[in-house]
Length: 251
Image (cartoon, rainbow, N blue to C red):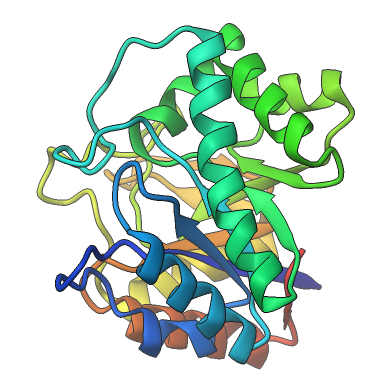
């Protein structure tokens, strides 16, 4: 068995650090790097790419709505063409730093409100996929299985990688628990490790109220670098997986 561990990273800005990138990077296999619209800046992007290269971690772009104040987590109105151009702009910026460091840009994963939009809106998903195809059709897209983005990727002939979360609770309908709730995040490393094992080994995930389990397929598991204790979570998850004979490697 094999699974990728990914982390949303590079979300600091100027003098401000967000997340624990240096501690988490050696524990993951893929990094989703913020591209400047919700967080990051040129220096942060370059340092994050260089850090990923140092640890042999695959790099992906993590584009968002242009919403630095709301950290990309506020809903915005945008046409498919606007989504396409905004995503192309961000992917192109990160691609420049990857080329400077001599490594490929392997995947694209939307962030925040843009992520949720392209998971259920077919037109928005098509705009997002057109951006990925325009920059490099061989690049993978990452998101929820069974989503509008997966359908759009299939229509465009682009590989889609299904993702699940080790540091987030799920609702009975399969959606992520809203961050407005105090119990949206899983911050206990042992709880996160148990959830990861259930996903990878059994293809199941227990919902937040523990009333039922859902079927889930995932090639990659995500931890957010701004989740409290993210490195400890990644370390516990990796130890549990490898202890069970599961190989941790980039997709």
